[in-house]
Every structure is written in structure tokens, then in C-alpha cells.
Length: 370
Image 1 (tube, helix red, strand yellow):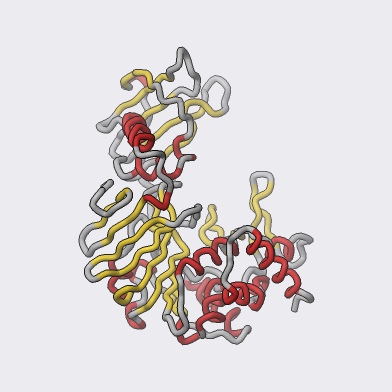
Image 2 (cartoon, rainbow, N blue to C red):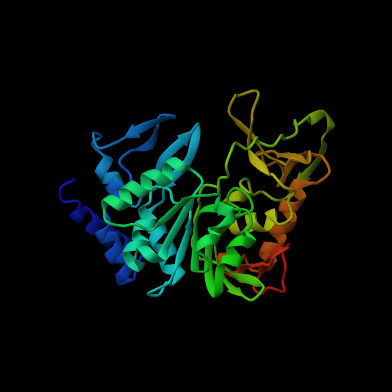
């Protein structure tokens, strides 16, 4: 048992209140009551290009556990599971607008800490949580039970929800999805809420809060920013193949768009992804002369690619592109559209989900972006 952890939890609550991450007395009480260190006895910290194990023998273990920090808890060459920032958890839990007696399904059990917060607020009988990783589910169950909490946990592909215990009043996904599964809509009651990180690609999306209304779920993106790991499915997924960027076959032109990293404007980047072909990859190409970062590149699995020089010459930059879709032209067009609409932030974007289709929109559902 860690001595005086309650003092650290209290300091964390005060920090979250100061940062505007939690205002509800009920959720503040939950953060005070749940010992986060019981759920993250071991995690991984990136240092010097390598992952370092941090446990109770590490001098900064307890400090990091009770900070507003996301902690990587499972690696498979890359991080595949984490305990999210407490401030992001409380912001999402408040956005859920739960009431006494509400039944909540969590997609992504992870360490079990978020399920513990829910169980403290709503009671075991009203909390359900699924994760595709059996080891995570088993460990979370042990940690929760040791603290006297016994919500329903299940090893399950989160895409399918948990139909045997439906309907739910709320569904919260602590993972990113490219679209909201219809199974979630089917399992939420009329008027119930779904909160999920909807990402069309890396940085291309945000938290969306949808309300079920008959044959659809509809709502807006939430102000602020959230970034979760993708929802995982059983088995391994082979990475998609991207084209070789052959400069000899490229079309060459110039662009007056001087934005070097359009992905940093996440609403604009989301807008661009409503037009990009699937499977976009982006970043900096290697400069053969220096061995460091060179041109910005975009590529998609249909064979489209472009490279944009980071050097500005006469107010323009050089673009090389090939394949069926002019990817940088899309960035240019959506940048013009974004500016014309007044540089809309996340709260002006929304989503509508039906059984056989879904679309993003700006300001109102009839203003479709997809």
C-alpha cells in the first residue's frame, strides 16, 4: 500500500479544476477516491529513443502516476494501450452527462482506471467494459475487485459493443475509430449518448458526442483536443502498401500555399480527409544530401503521392506529384474552403450516423462534407 496517496490524488484534483478539466463535484470525488497507482503499477516512458520501464522502484513513478499524464502500459514494438491523461478522462466523463442509474458501456477497458471512476459514480451494476486484449481485461478485473468494484468486464471486439447487456444510456470509447459502428447505435437507448474519438486519419478528427434519435445518431465534435490509440481487433493487421515516389514520373508544378505542416490545423486536416483517398500517410521525406528531413510528402494506397519542397522561392514552393489523385491540390482547395468558412473550429463540425451510411457536416447536417 502506498502511503499518503490520497494527498497526491487531492493535488491532482486541484490541478484538474484549475485547468478546467473537471467541475462536477461527483467526478472530483471519484478521482479522490480511486488510487490510480493500483491500476498502473508498471508503465513505459520514452527516453533517448528507447522505452524505459517505470515501476514502484523508480523515483518518479508515483509523481507521474498522479500527474495529468498519459502513461503507456502495453507495447508491441509500438504503444498499443495506455492510461489516458486524467484530465481527458474527466473531461469526457463530464461530457457524457450521466445521471444516477444510467447504464454505461465503455469500449476499451485498458488498465481499468476509467471503469473504476464510472463504478464509483454509478455503481457496479451500471458499468460494462470491453477490451480485445484478454490480459488487460483479466488484470483490470483483479485490480477493480481488490478495491471492491465488480463491474461487468468482457474480452470482446469493441466494434460489436456488448449486445447481451444492452440497452445502455451512454457509450464511451477510449480508443479512436474511423467511423462509429452501427452496433453501438443499436445498443444505445433512444436519446442516449455516444462519445467517441472519431479519426479519419492521424490528427484528422476529434471527440464527437452523438445522440440517438430514431434511425440515426447525430451530434457535434467537442471543443478541445483528444487523441487516442486506434480501436484494435483480434489478430494482426498487415500494413497497407504505399507507392514508391518515383521523381522521374512525377508531374512538377508550384504552389502558393506555404503551409508546411497542414496536419497541425486539425479541423482543416479533418476536412481534407473527407476528400483524400483511403490510407493517407504523411511526413517528411529524407534529404539524400543531408540525411535529414527533406520535402513534405503525402501518399495513399491507390498509388497517389506528392512531395512539396520546404524551400520558398519567389513566394511559391515546388510540388512533385503522381498517381490518380492530386493530393496537394486537395489540401489547397480545402484550405481555401476553410478560410472562406471563417476557419471553423471543432464545435462547428458534426457527424450523422445511419445503419448504412454516415457523413460529416459543417454547422448543420444538411451541409454534408462527405
